[in-house]
Amino acid sequence: MPERNLDFDRIIDRKGTRSLKYDFAVRRGMPEDILPLWVADMDFRTSSYIEDALAERVQHGIFGYSDVQTPYFEIVRDWMKRHHNWETQEQWIVKTPGVVFAIAMAVKAYTEPGDCVLLQPPVYYPFSEVIKDNGRTVVNNVLYLGDDNRYHIDFDDFEKKIVENRVKLFFLCNPHNPVGRVWSREELTRLGDLCVKHHVIVISDEIHHDFIFQGEHIVFAGLKKEYEDISITCTSPSKTFNLAGMVLSNIFIPNHGLRHQFYRQMDAAGISQLGVMGLVACEAAYRDGEEWYQAMRSYVADNIAFTRKYVEENIYGVRMIEHEGTYLVWLDCRETGLSAEELDERIIHQAKLWLDSGKIFGECGRGFQRVNVACPRSVLAQALERLKNALI
Image (tube, rainbow, N blue to C red; front, side, top):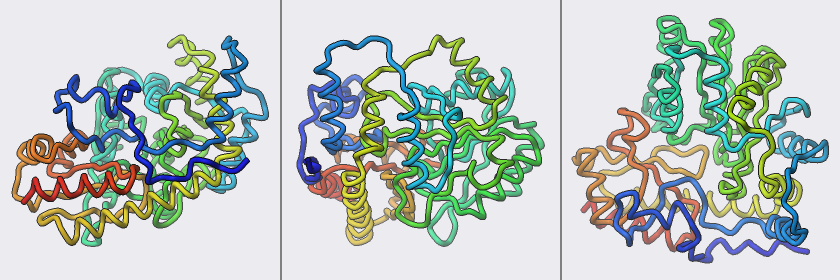
């Protein structure tokens, strides 16, 4: 049976479906008629093969405790090998209800209250929340925006922050959310060598690894055996196949000792089996979703190019940061002359757009906005037109 869900121009009404993106604007202080391009899920119907697999499982009618065996691992392993050239082993996989949950377990497993955890802002805001909420201390190695319109790492400051704060844990975001960098082999090696030198464990969030538009995604743990031994690699089909509501992630922990510590925290949290539908969806996605994935990725690439061209030609005072990975575009709005608060006010109440304000990703994100472009192009064009009119 051929793939049926390849019309990415189709607008699907998500209101009234318990959608966090569409049904909770008023509860979150937004106008009811706002157009949402914030949270990182897509407005595309997932692969029909996934729909069919889920429908078949529903027809069985019994939803008892469920788990997976070797075929699940083989399907996940084949995807990682085919798309990321990474050889994995079955015992490495720990299944969790999401990447943010996994990083919370890692914070508990590998640090003590008061310990320092290193981040590279502007970065995905739940990172800092998870650290602080667990009584640990955030240390920032701030990325800097270069003349090439890309963000870069200050490696001297990276090592200095590790040494001065006795950092035990580092959160690597690759591809980086929200700045869109796909870190190079050289950059990852410099980071990795410093972490090995100073005995720092690396939580590598690679959930956006299937959205690479420039360069190539390199699995951090796959670069060197020394990195493998200090790495917790976080992946999920949720971003790639629009399955966030299935609440399933595959976390790879090659080192037996680190894996044992992680499992202890999972046990303490009362987590054992996950929902059967997430397991079914993951298998179907990685086994049968290739055609849908390639078509979706091509459409998103065109949306990114469309956004770049529109911003350059139509929105004065705004520039799009050079984009290498993820479907989340990072807009620099500082030359509009508006403060971060004024910018938010105009976007929310004049443009009636719900974006992610840059300031939530750290102080260095003030004056920026993150835009989710994984939507029908007509919706994206409407959003950009609203943004232009609000910033005139």
